[in-house]
Amino acid sequence: SDPTNQFCDARIGYGDSGCGVSAAASSSKILIKGGTVVNAHHQEIADVFVEHGIIVDVKPNIKIGDDVTVLDATGKFVMPGGIDPHTHLAFDFMGTRTIDDFFSGQAAALAGGTTMHIDFAIPVGGSLIAGFEAYEERAEKSVMDYGFHMAVTKWDDTVSKEMEIMVNEKGINSFKFFMAYKGALMINDVLLLEGLKKCKSLGALAMVHAEHGDAVFEGQKRMIELGITGPEGHALSRPAVLEGEATARAIRLAAFVNTPLYVVHVMSIDAMEEIAKARKSGQKVIGEPIVAGLVLDDSGPWDPDFVTAAKYVMSPPIRAAGHGKALQAALSTGILQLVGTDHCVFNSTQKSLGIDDFRKIPNGVNGIEERMHLVWDTMVESGQISVSDYVRITSTESARIFNIYPRKGAILAGSDADIIILNPNSSFEISTSTHHSRTDTNVFEGRRGKGKVEVTIAGGRIVWINDELKVTPGSGKYVKMPPFSYLFAGIDKVDAMYFSSLKAPVKRAW
Ligand SMILES: NC(=O)NCCC(=O)O
Ligand SMILES: [Zn+2]
Ligand SMILES: [Zn+2]
Image (cartoon, rainbow, N blue to C red; front, side, top):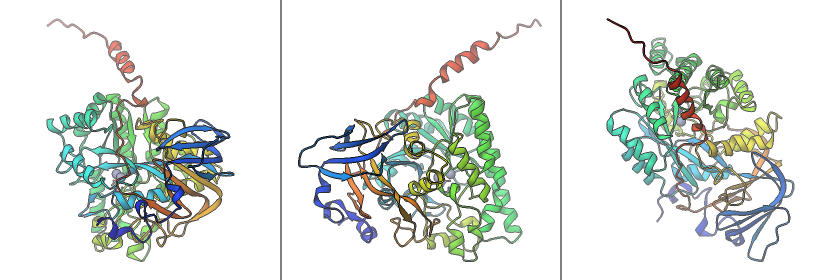
């Protein structure tokens, strides 16, 4: 008996059980006919032919034989499946484990048009190898492709060596440094500096959770002393200025080391403006807003109902409405490059761990199922970006940054058959009663909008069609991500110029 069954049979069908879609859909050959095929660089009306999990051909009027599943995409967009660069599935955090594991979280992702995610493998007791192995096991029943970032939470020679093993043997090309969560995951500037140097030498991308952890700690104490113990105290204790400060500090240290930097969950104008300034000066800094930060505001945690208020608690906190609007504008102008979710969900019982003290509310919100729809509605329907840019910020840019393009993030001959068909004239509505995550709340509850993912194809299998999900545990593959992405091009030249510009030491007589 499959241990995942007990959780998921209500809304998730199994590939092997025959539920969900017609038998033809299990054919390994699929022809998507007459849609507008959109890549980040180009769009055209064409057919897409898939065989054995790979896109074989993209051109108008492809002729095929009998044993092929044909999907009519006339009037619809055929795009690369979403790649979510920031998730936490089966994550042990703040005294509990996220309610979505690799099975339920991925099922939710597929129902929302995301076909690959990159999860954060958090080390066990600081050991990267133990952490990697633990996550390998947790991901065994995957129903879609996935990769890992690794977090670095302590520093010694062993960790330094383990980073080499992660990159050279395990397919990891990014490491996250938490500048917050004092007493748990937080690192100091000395470690950050060591980590940045090591990342550079390995061609791995350094990522930061940018908040001033010591000041947050102080801010939390301040709230408790004022008697503010509810969820609203969370945001009050960690204002945007602390996110801006840490973002600036990480950016400057990365500039000093001359290595690229990726800032995760950019939630504020303060952080975004630091990224804008650095990019304007030519520094390689990537900024990732998340869907909750783009479309929500800071009113949620003030709800009089604890469960409703607590579902919005995440770090950095969701800011006042003007921040979200500014982040949208920054995305549309290229100041920020891609959208993640930071999907990290805890149910109401888990959130209630902090009923008397907001510091104990497990931090995290949902988004893995909602991202593709909300970004479409917020950014494309509103006229802020083109459909090609939508593909870029939801899929292609992730693939490029993490060095798996064009295997992922493209509808090209030879790419993996991770494809969505989106109907711009259909609409979506978000509800806990229909979502596929195991959590019993949804921070986007009741939101509706235009543009609906009608079909998801992952690894050449039709997994989402007619509002039915049909997944096969174990069908998802671990995607190794090689080092030295495009972000590293020219780093050595800049170093060479810098060192050659240094004058010889002055010789002084005593
Ligand atoms: N963001 C959050 O509140 N939870 C997940 C952990 C992290 O990314 O900081
Ligand atoms: Zn974080
Ligand atoms: Zn996160």
